[in-house]
Image 1 (cartoon, rainbow over the protein chains, first blue to last red):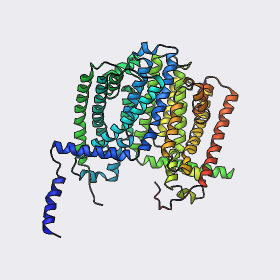
Image 2 (cartoon, each protein chain N blue to C red):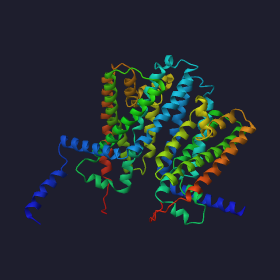
Image 3 (tube, helix red, strand yellow):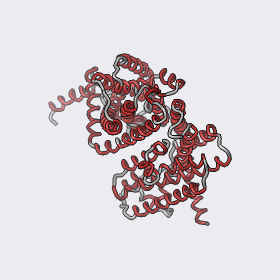
Length: 288
Length: 264
């Protein structure tokens, strides 16, 4: 082997394995995001088939709300007219259907199979790899589901007026919400260092988000007792608030929503980092 | 009669082994059962909240939706506790994993179905029994009917699953399609059937028979009628027969993957 070539190769490889500064870390996370999107796009047909559920659920809810509206004034009781409700649902369903339930339990599988050892050895912190992969997955699924949802809403209830600023407010809070949601989801996933399977905990977290976050109906449509509980909990900032900003031409609460989301995220970082540090101590690599 | 008893012992053997396997990871199993129970309770809270704000939807009230959720959840739980592989059949067919069952003397379909249990399914059964008992407060006759409807719902759901998953014999990769059809079946069966227009209702009593696992049991629990009850039993038996026939027809087209498989 050429000695010069070998010596040149060592520093280059060494640099690649160094975590680098914040810019380098963000660059690598972005690369994971892009690779995830490219990988998923290779199976576009499968993603489209999964969007059929969006058509189904919006159709069912249109029938439900129309049947309810036949005997009671839904608009007066909720503050949302039927077309607004259906567009609201298109947004919340797109948000929640962008969750890959297999992704929620990916850490479980890596801990059980020992694959975590390979990920830990890479020059990108383990959590950031998962953040990049999750964002790629969710952004793609969200975009596709929302496109299908908007199309279905157009067909079943017609257009509603959406201000450009509403779009900016809705999308910024939705995407920032993905990061905040990941912080809590990942903290739960890391519990797999102690319990074999976190699927049950994820299921609970997602259902709480669904019910108390306002995925199925806006919080105004709940009776007072449940509405008050939902208003007091953080789940609404991940689902209800972005969807409300989407359908209601009132962006006055936009910055407030972003601020509360940031607070929820920062609070979530504490358990995530503590669990991660403690969990790493339990990893034992045995070769293979 | 001896063959039926032998088949009963065979099924019971698998049920016991599946539970023993699940109990090997007690905490995980308990957490999944409990999570599914809470998941169903959350849906129930949604509907109770809904009916707290809007009194009636097309003539249906709170108790009707509780009965519907109780029957569907308990039936689904029973079906997937016993036949936990039902929604994995398409993948097994595609990957050539039926080879294992073909080499053994027991019936292929029932053997493949019962060789796994869904770990969350007992949570559905518990939810159905608790919701029905505590909220509906049924009479002894209604309890008896509820147990029968658990069985008919389980039979129809598993049969529907077998038929849709068997599409893999003809289409190859049919996992996505079968999953969407199952989603449709479950979604339509967990909303009041009366809200749908006549064209959808027709579909719900034929191609996606959600009406038979949701609307008909609720209707019978509200007001019993022998012809409707007989119709439900006949449909459940017919669904099982059709599922068996479709699977057998598909099995003739099955090609072994010639793989060395580790059974999961």
